[in-house]
Image: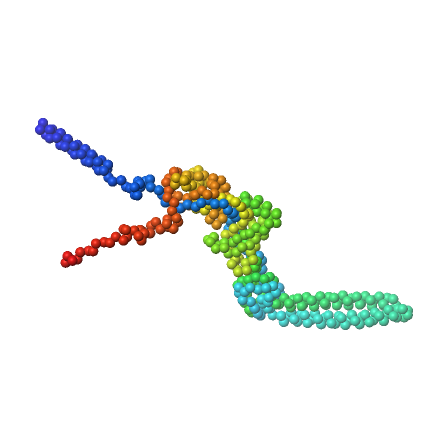
Amino acid sequence: MKNKTLWITSGLLVAVGVLTIFLLSGKQEKQAPPTKRGGMDGASRPLPVTVATARTGDIDVVIKALGTVTARNTVTVKPRVDGQLVRVTFREGQLVKVGDLLAEIDPRSFQSQLDQANGQLVRDQALLAIARLDQVRYRGLLAKDSIAKQQVDAQEALVKQYEGGVKTDRALVDNAKLQLAFTQVKAPIAGRLGLRLVDTGNMVRATDAGGLVVITQTQPITVIFSIPSDNLAAVMSKLQENQELAVEAWDRDNKNKLATGVLLTVDNQIDVATGTVKLKAEFTNSDNALFPNLFVNIHLRTETRHGVTLIPTSASQRGTQGTFFYVVNEDQTVSMRPVVLGSVSDNIMAVEKGLVPGEKVVIDGADKLRQGAKVEIISPDKRGGENKGPPKGDKRQNRRKPPAESKDGA
């Protein structure tokens, strides 16, 4: 009985202790000082944001695509006659014009053929001259009835035979001259030379697959790119009106503009696998900024829209309801505004519906906002310096620390 009373008394003491601890902790929570900043609870203080004001202006309707620079003409220079390559006159990478001498093949055998053809021509011309003199005599004798008509006809046939021979000889002479001219390999087009494919001293033939060198025409140069078929109607309408569409070529990072050109043509069919159509643009490339097979970003401007509502692209937000903006109200709260966007150009976009000029839209700091949130509009430079520490005039920075006591008590 005594042990039972002891256990009951111990249990009551433990219960009283637990209850006392619970009550004391609740009291401390109630007496804890509120987290205030500037006289306002931290959960309800305004959030700093940067805003932009919607304005009215003009914007270009631009179609962006990825393109490949293509030489306007590419020619593999090959010899047109067989022989030994005795001289190469070009430098690799050199810019050449039409007709510039590139290489020379041993001309001696072709010169001999030309001399032989000229000799044959001279001989046949002499025979033709004698035959024509005999023809004149025979006709005079026939008029006096001193020669048979058959002999005169035979002489006239002989003259025609020699005339045919002379024409054949002249053709042979011309062909020999042509073959001799082919020993000098000249540039068929203007452009930039590639690497040399054959060295001096090698035997070259007209049937060789590799050729001597490759020429690519880079001034002007073209770019081939593809756009979605949905944009084809806008492009074709401008081309049918004979309007010149401007095309800009930008580097791979889309930061530096390399060249400006014009649209040349549109392919005659749509690629059913990708739903795109190929286009070709031409650039003067006077500074050689575009190089064959270079990948570039293409900006094709189809039109310029006037008097539209413009806002920076950084204001655009996406959610389950679609694209929206955070619009700042007069009471410094924000509202989620669904919008319909239009064209985008140089970090500026057009708003087709949902925003009017003069309204302020959040462009920085929207990640923590909610419908009806209180905001504080700050300048971009101030927002960028939020984490740079207290300002120079802050008392916390200028507060002097008391001098440390020395070991000897000074």
